[in-house]
Length: 228
View 1 (cartoon, rainbow, N blue to C red):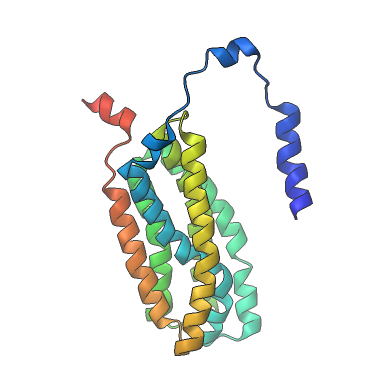
View 2: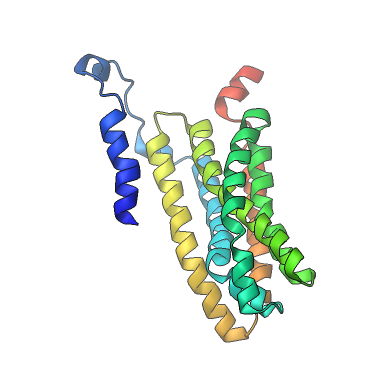
């Protein structure tokens, strides 16, 4: 997998991305001060929001099939249902990108962030059969596909291109950390309590906080300037 990632991403970038000469490099604006970025309340609100969202997504990545089995489906059926996640992820990624071109940034992000909470509520409140489990898997897949798009888009909209590398690195690292640790924590919680119910309720609360933080951001800076 690592070799495939190298061939598909690094080599095309090395071969085909333009290389600017010294004159173009001299004309570049100065790099953003990292202390200014770290001190931004917008960055910290986004970081906490992505921490909660990634925790929800990470739990589903590892535990969806056990959750479906815990809800009464056989393990074979649960494995079949999980196959619907990947096509839904592609649809979620494409759809989120389209919506970002049409609707306000905060609204699209808040809606995307709400999807994992809806999936948690579904597991808690709705009895599952094969059809409802497939619909749930599609919802989770759309949520997984949209979240990374939200990280990338909001990094550029709220901090601009000069700060994009640093901001995106911080947020996507937080996202990856939360995905890895949340799946482990959910497993430990299940071993201790014998059920996913408490984990799902905690994830719903975390998603609600994340949605509130995103809605509190206000308009991206360039749009706020245009409105004034």
